Amino acid sequence: MRDSYSRRKFIEQIFAIGPATLGAGLLISSCQSETSSKQEEPKSGTDPCKDFSGVSENDLNTRKKLGYVDKSPQPESKCGNCNLFLPPKVARACGGCLLFKGPVLTSGYCTYWAPISK
Image 1 (cartoon, rainbow, N blue to C red):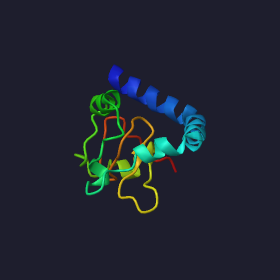
Image 2: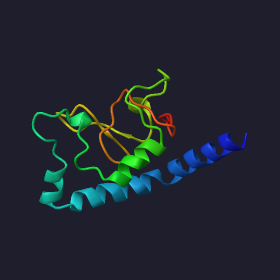
Image 3: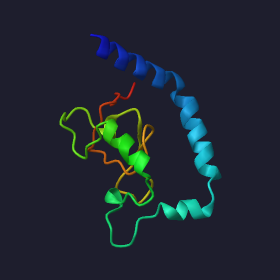
Image 4: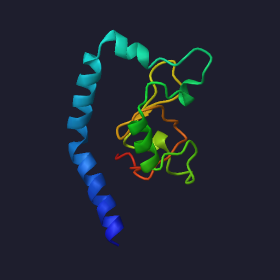
């Protein structure tokens, strides 16, 4: 029972600080230089949703710790209907996540999936 309380508390905290965090993230990303934006561009000929060239080893470990997988084991719980999902930019096949860096598929899943509040 304690694990569900911890998870619930975490999700409540995310919702409480989510708008402020998202705003700060948008501000930081808009202030990045041209060179850092170009580093995130996928290498030609690679699937952009499989390109981790701009993702550090530490960030890859965070993805693993959060249990991210490309295909959700629970059809009703996918990244595409998660409150922490960042939708793909125009002409992109994959999006992102507020919790970790790197490409995220709409069909993906992690242990911190949070339903979109209506």
